[in-house]
Image (cartoon, rainbow, N blue to C red; front, side, top):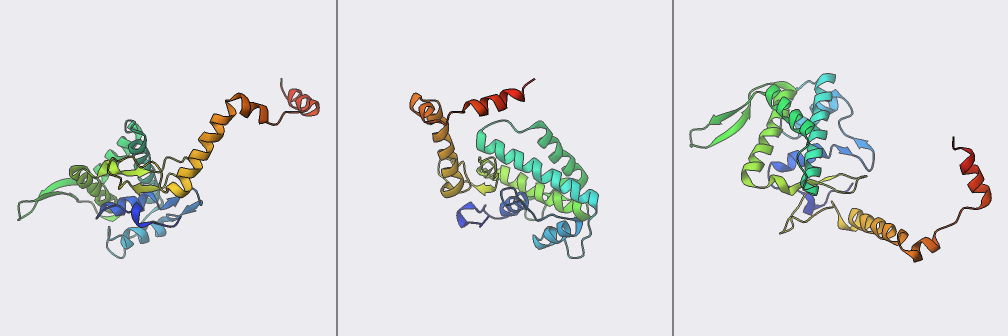
Length: 209
């Protein structure tokens, strides 16, 4: 999927959006196709130092965290509660990363990951999530409501009403489907629906039972 400027999140939150979008569900593209690909992506995003190594277990935990974040972004889009399993996955990742509050010489404080390796890098992503919550931007990061897409995007609308990553594609697709469903429930729509012939009815009934 072509990234559009209006989808981008502000500041470091863009890294979280990019992490969720390492899986393009609609196109069937997986950027984290192996442990080496995961390590390369984390280094590319400056979440880890060059030379990072990753294991298959690291990869599994990273993908679990990514999909937990996606489910939370879907909740942001539908107004529902955060799934318990997703919350637990984030908690586990924070524990493995040994995330802790650190105070700096300028009087500011921030969450920092004390663990090394992939766990530490994923902990830095969670620290970005915490900062976004504190700044009131977290709820604007959403996953597209179109079930075949679920692409992460940042809702720049004033009233936070954005539902699809692109109105031109996913928005129009959802509206067209809703229109067809409404038409199917009207007498006119049912009259235009194709009718099954006797042979088809016999074929269908023969498979029952």
